[in-house]
Image 1 (cartoon, rainbow, N blue to C red):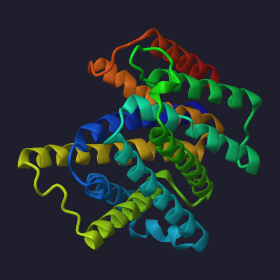
Image 2 (cartoon, one colour; image 1 turned 30 degrees about the horizontal axis):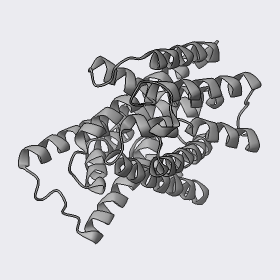
Image 3 (cartoon, helix red, strand yellow; image 1 turned 90 degrees about the vertical axis):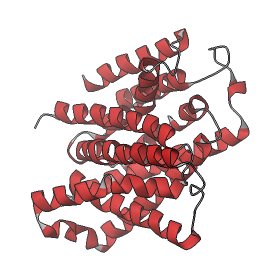
Image 4 (cartoon, rainbow, N blue to C red; image 1 turned 90 degrees about the horizontal axis):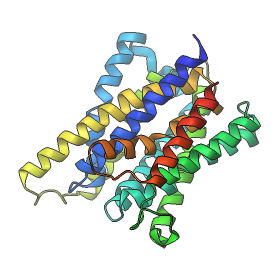
Length: 299
């Protein structure tokens, strides 16, 4: 199959992640973070497991019992849980436009790791366009009171959480690529195993600490949150992740990483369409940089 189809997978997967971010923002109004992650698992894990059983039979999980692969999968699952906890926590305190431009630098960390370890062919063109795309996403997602560029829009807490999340995601993406470089690992089965582990971790933390923060919330709020988190699980962990992991598995990972990193851009574009964000010259410049660089990247 042509490399182009996997780049298309990455674009669609990135869009799915952007849409998921909006759903999470709406759905995480009140419920506990770990409760929300468990609900996402409910909307994705059963579908992924049934999909794998239908495609590969009951033994689809056996490759993940190999020690080296198991350690990597457990590590990436833990990193995902940690990053999501940080993200959902800081989103409850800070505007999306303050956090996302910092997190958007995560493809740089993944690309640097690939470059240092020689796991993928990273050309000077790919490095340059990755940096331009990251800067473009920064411009699109940056939010300040006057629509201009001002470092005052950032605070120490936002920087601390944003950089931590970016590093965690960057390392996690690199480890995902290592797992998917195994000939016996497929994007669909990897999604099922990884998100099953994350969901079990979330449920375990809930059980241990007896979280009940949402118990006093109105039933309508809990119902709304449940619905949005369920949909977010399906769109992000079924549609988005399967497409992205399949593109990592079979495509040129060095090209795919910056495309997947476009998801904050899609989140802002969707927010503009939904009239939650106002288009400014700065955002328009960022969109043009991202689009033009993405086109050059796939040529």
